Amino acid sequence: MGYVNDTHMSRWIDPGAIIKSAGTWTRTYSSNKIFDRRTAADANANLFVPITIPQNSSIEKGSKVASIDVFYNITTAALDDFATVELNKETVSSVGAHTAAAVTTSLDSGHDTAAERKATGEHKMTITITTPEFLDDDSFYMLYMVIDAAASSVFDLVGVRVNYTFRA
Image 1 (tube, helix red, strand yellow):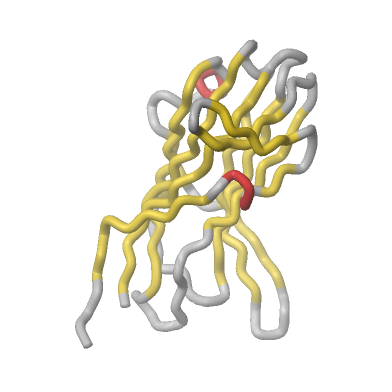
Image 2 (cartoon, helix red, strand yellow):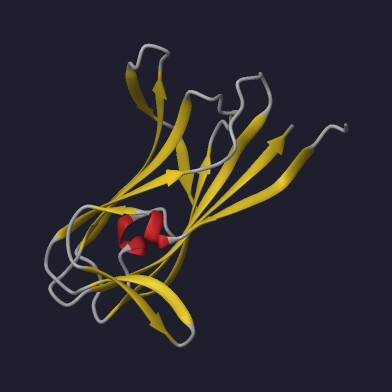
């Protein structure tokens, strides 16, 4: 058996695996592309993205997330706001206790303000973890975002790509 240390791993998270709290979301197929479309409405929606990667109880094994890319499109009208982009590390104990804390991150220069994130167009927003760490088997990441749509904003969620190092 050999040792694996692959620093170029990625995992695609389909929009169907992303939890959406509000609004009417429809799986859409258009121009050979599949995405989840939020019907235009002047309201907020919460998006919860479970970051599903291999984990390991051994130190320095499993996966270490470097960055997360969120792919989305906004058409018809800009959002009213897109202020919240937060990565949380959640932990469960052997007795079932559940805790969570925000992880320090930065956003790419094209999405580091709400004005850039809420503009119409095609988007690839990159969230970079400041201090990446290998996750053990009782911790996981959950990406939390809040979009505040205008009455005519159409939001297409294409999906999320997680970029990580894998060791085994």
